[in-house]
Length: 121
Image (cartoon, rainbow, N blue to C red; front, top):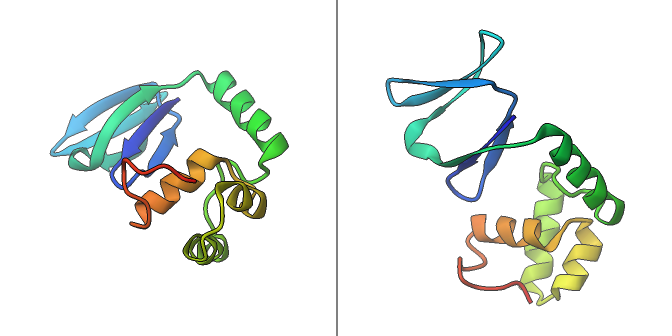
C-alpha cells in the first residue's frame, strides 16, 4: 500500500507493489496490472504504508471520531465553513463533525480558510 500525498493537502492510498514513470505520470501496479496513475507534477511525496497498521489506526480513530479518514460530504464541508466563520472552537468543530483536529485543519487549509502555519484554536 502506498500513500500518495498530492497538492492542496489531498492524498490517495493505492494498493500497489510497483511504480513506474510514463511521460510525466507515475503509474502504480499490483500483480502486473495497472491500478492507478497520477501526474508527477501533482505528487508531493510517496509513503510506503503497512496496510495492517493503517487499518488499525483508522479503526482506533473512528472509536472517538466516527468520520475520521472519510471523504468530506458537501454538507459536512458547509457545516465546517459556517462554524469556522462563526468562531467555533476546535473542540466544537471536532464534536460537530466527528473528525480529528488534524483532518479539520487540513480541510480548512485546502479551503483557504486557515494559513499553513496557523493553528486551529
